[in-house]
Image (cartoon, rainbow, N blue to C red; front, side, top):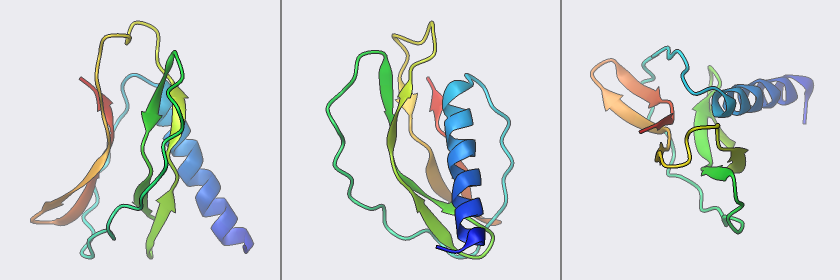
Length: 104
């Protein structure tokens, strides 16, 4: 794996992990003309108390879609009875837009 690919994956994972630890995050929408590939099947490990599952998803790296594997993230304090809404792609007139996961 070359240095650029490693950097893109590191940035993607850092953004995903940072988003998992913050209750509220800012969102920037950029329309992409090409829709994401179908989600990959992931075997979800057994549940862990105090954690929630962040499903794998496709991210756009500026040139193509890259798969980010799912992982267990620490549930923020005070969110024990709130539901996690996974991030997802939405097709809008401007193109495909990633809607970040959030708590409901």
